[in-house]
Image (cartoon, rainbow, N blue to C red; front, side, top):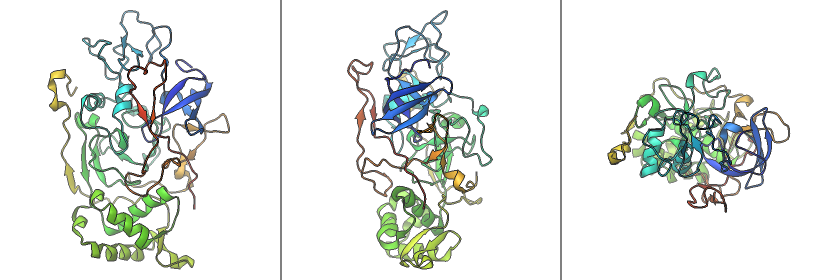
Length: 414
């Protein structure tokens, strides 16, 4: 497999859109995948398209087409030193670009993507916005499921990485593609798991900055969203109303962007949420129904809250025009919820079977077991940051990338 060998340190893109440090243990050239051991000693088969190597090789060839310079000169990325033909890179490299200043798409995304939303200020934010005007793949070539939630190629977002639609992703209302929270620059608050109450348009469809509008939510939707988020964070079905459900809602009230519900006095929130939980037996189950404490509540089916067809935008966030800040650089703006059967919970991402040499579904990703998990919007209290710096590597001069601990993949079941 070109560019990757056993023993190489690599960056592997996870289903959250972020890159994580790992080491290649085995390479399968036929199935175009590698067995990668991550820093928490977990091992997973990762598709080659989602692996980015530090090694630039001895021979100068384009890292996209593996061809030598020939008629077209090769341009080296300032950070990773990988070579590209101008037309092989997305977007095409400008004729005036040189290896002393030009930075490739992979390095831009490695720096700019963050949990809670990509950076919005600085050079890399502007470069990222330019890169996002074009997708590095043909959207029409993807094979989608009937609900348009997953595709067979496991190709999503601007980064072309894997993804899970219910795990902090936004769907573009124009093209239908799903985009990672970490790759978007329009969010004012981090997403909750399963929160699809947004009207979002990607940079490709908008031909400029992303646009996003908050959709209205009812008390039933809020209760459903909070329970779904907590169930993924804590890996439990039932939660105490006062100490967990209301506590979470009150602590994150302003970040939930609830529109007209935001003005509800604190003393009235409890009554409205409790009434929603008790009045909608088709969505929620009470502890007293299963001979447990009546203050416990859970979801009938662990699924994100459904979107109503008559939802209209509630809160409009103006586009963040990043490139307007510095024109001197010459940069120009160049489905209802899914069937919630057990199959919808299988992990259809970059990951392949750990125990067998074949592609196999895995459970969905959740926050790392190596950090203190908090059921808040930020999800984790402290992630163990890992600087992707290795002595003698191309990054030893710039110490560019900082990666968090890779999220683990625990089984999710009741």
